[in-house]
Length: 86
Image 1 (cartoon, rainbow, N blue to C red):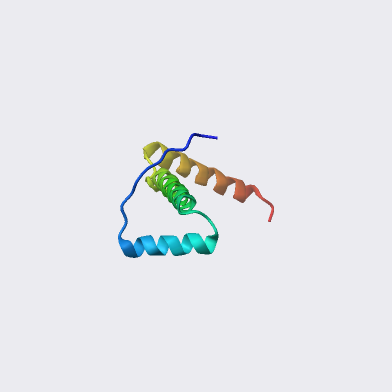
Image 2: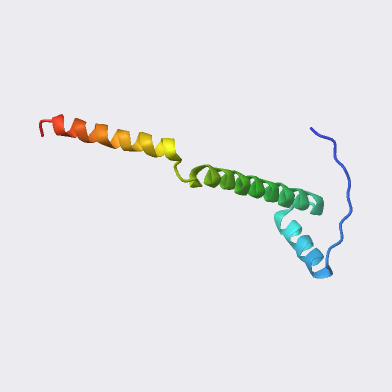
């Protein structure tokens, strides 16, 4: 297990009260609640970044070589279909 590090943060009083109430409802310490929140935030950011990378990978238009290959594949498929004894 990694070593723990203490940190101090400043919160608006209303938010601090909400944090205390939620920690009490969940039966966890305030520190544990902050850890859970930060872990959740990090996971969401990682998911957003991964989704962005996936979207970028699939968003590009086909280049000239890809268009040629696609055209050849369509012609070949059409020829194959003509030979089928449907």
